[in-house]
Length: 179
Image 1 (tube, rainbow, N blue to C red):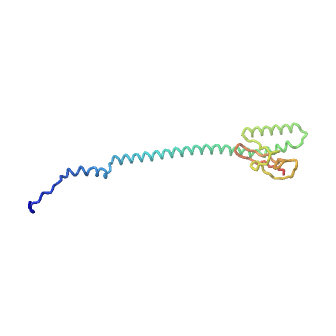
Image 2 (cartoon, rainbow, N blue to C red):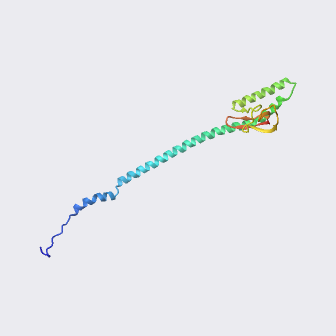
Image 3 (cartoon, rainbow, N blue to C red):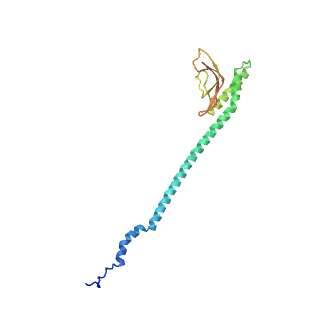
């Protein structure tokens, strides 16, 4: 072969190169169905999260409302009882007074008994004090006395009875404490 005669270059048809390049192009070009599926999955996850949060918020609201309702009842009961405590104190003073009129004394005793029954039905109880150990959560010490016959921090006199419900003190007992 002479220099002028060249060997023809081998020509590769495009159809043969296209299939080899197709898998690479498929990986590079996103499939619209897969994108839509992923978007729907994300949307479903978001909606489930919103639903769970809403359910938790409602549950918390329901609990809080129930607690506030119970608290409102307890507070109103305590306030009502506190309004009647001066009547209790006056009846107690009347019972301590000497009288020759037995009918009067019997009437005051019956009134006091009835008031104690009403307070008991409401769940309000008198705080035990006389002879008990002083507890600052229940008692208000207004006097202190040295008494060898009484133990340390023992209540020797009650000036005003205290009352409480199960959850809170309505009025502290006003007491004299020994030692």
